[in-house]
Image 1 (cartoon, rainbow, N blue to C red):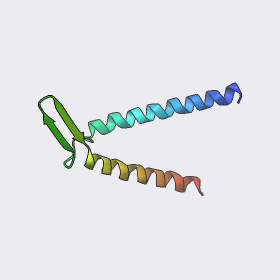
Image 2 (image 1 turned 90 degrees about the vertical axis):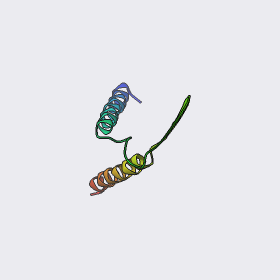
Image 3 (image 1 turned 60 degrees about the horizontal axis):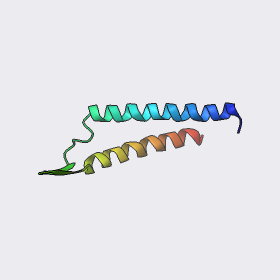
Image 4 (image 1 turned 120 degrees about the vertical axis):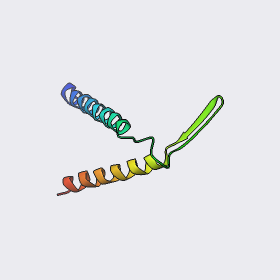
Length: 75
């Protein structure tokens, strides 16, 4: 592997991390993680959080996005 192709891979990973960070930041601002159906149990000294509804919404969004990307590249 030459240095030029390695640089492209590193740049691609960097862009991917920036996009992932922006998506996480926006999802927090849109209320993902505090939806009805997300279970939060807090007791003295410990807590448990199970994001059931947020996981379902995120799964649906990622499925739609990946299906669109796959359809665009298969033409």
